[in-house]
Amino acid sequence: MMKNIYKSVVYFLALGLTFASCENYLDDAPKGSKVPTTLVDYEAFLRDEYTNHRVNIAGASQLMNDQYATLATLSSDRLINANYMWDQNADRIALKVSDETTYYASYQGISTFNLIIENALSTTEATEEQKRIVWAEAKVLRAMNYFNLVNFYADTYVASTASTKLSVPLITSANINAPSKQVTIQELYDFILNDVKEALLYLPKVSQTVLHPNLGTGYAFYARVYLQMNNYTEALKYADLALAENNKLYDWIAFYNANKTLIETPANYTTFTSPMGYNYVENYNYRHGANSSLTTENSIPVERAQRFEAGDARFLSRWKTYTVGAETYFRRTLSGAFNFGGMTTVEIYLIKAECLARANQISDALAVLNTVRKTRILPASYQDISTTDKTTALKAIYRTKNNELTNTLIPFADARRLNAEGVYPVSFSKVAGGTTYTLSATSHMWTMPFPQGAVKNPGNGTITQNVAK
Image (cartoon, rainbow, N blue to C red):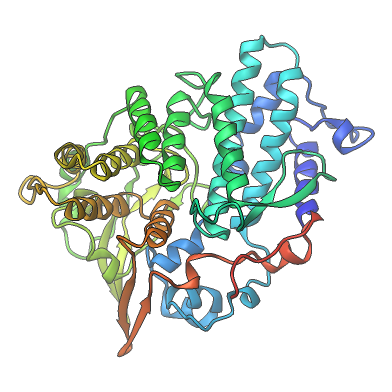
C-alpha cells in the first residue's frame, strides 16, 4: 500500500503540468507528459493545495469531541462511535479496515516533497538562491507532515522512552522502490529538527504564496516541535523569533460587531465568509484541515461549547445552538477557507505564554495571554486574567489555546504531552442517554492505530502497531 501511494503520485504527475524524475520512476516518460527540468516545474507542486496541503486529523477531533457526531453517524460508523463515545473496549484496529486519509494523504504529500528535495537543486532556469528556497520550503512541509503523523499514530514524545518506542515509517526518497523503515520516536524527531534546521538558512522572509513556508513559518514550527518535546527554552526562543516576523492578531470583536445583527438573531443560521482563509493576518502559512477545498467547518457538541469563555466573539461568530428532532448541538455558521493545518500567530503567542509560565514568569505569561484575549473577548465580558499561581495561569493558557486551535491537531497533541507529564492531565467526562462516559488521561485511545491497509501492505518495510486496540 505504501508503494501504491508513490505510484499514484507518479500517475498524478504524469497527467498534470509536470512529471517526476524519470530515472526514479520510469525508463521513459509517458507520451504527452512533460518531464520537469526547470525550478518552476517543481515549485508548481507546492501550489497543489488540494493534494499536498491537506491535514486530516478527524479521528483526533472526534476523540476530543471537538466536532459533533450525529446519532445517525454514531449508529452507522463504528470507528467514529468508538472514538466519540470513548469506548475503551472497541478494537479500533479491526475497525480501520479501509484506507485512511490521515495516513495516505500525509504520505502522498511526503512523496511530493521528497521529489522536490531530491531534484530542486539540479533544476535549470533558476539561480542557486531560488533553488535553495524551493528546496527549503519542501523540507519544512515534509517535516510538518511527519510531525502530524508521529503525533497521531505514535505515543507522544517522552525523552526517557523516545529512543525505544517506534513512531511511523520514515521515507526520504521519491523512488517508488524506496525502503520504508519504522524508526523510533527519537529518530523521527531528530529528522524533523534537522530538516527545519537546514531549511531555516534559506527560507525567505516573504514567500511566493501563503502555501509556501516563509522564515516565520520555520521559526513557528520549530517552536511547536520543541514545545512537544518539553524543551521550553528552545520553544520560547523560536516563538520570539516567529513573532518578530509576524505578530498580528485578528480582531474578532470587530468581526462580531460587523455581523452582530445576524449573529444575535435567534434561529438565523446564515453563514458568513470565514476570515480564517488564505489572507488571514495570523497566517504564517496555510494548509487545509480535514476537507481539502472550500467548505464549512464542524458543528460542535453542547459540552464542547460550554468550555469557551463567556463573551468569546470568535466562538459566537462561528457556532449557534441548533435543535433538530432529539438532537441539540452548536451548528457552524462560517463557510469558506479555514487554516486548520498551517502555522498561525495565535498558536505562537500561546506557546510563548506557556513557556514563560513554565519559567515562573507568571505576570509576563499572563500579559501575553491577555494580549490574545483582548482581541477575542467582548468588552462587556472581558477581564484580565490575573494570578500569581502557576497552575492557575497554565490552565488559563491551555483553555484559551484549546479554544483557539479547535479542529487542528494541537489540542490533541497538547493533551498527550500533558498526560505524559502527569502534572496537568487532560481527561473528559460526559453523560449521554443516562450513561456516564469518560476518557482518562491514561487511556490507550490517545494513540491512533495505523489503518490495516498500511500494516498489511507496508511497501518496502514493515509496520508494527503502536497501540493494542
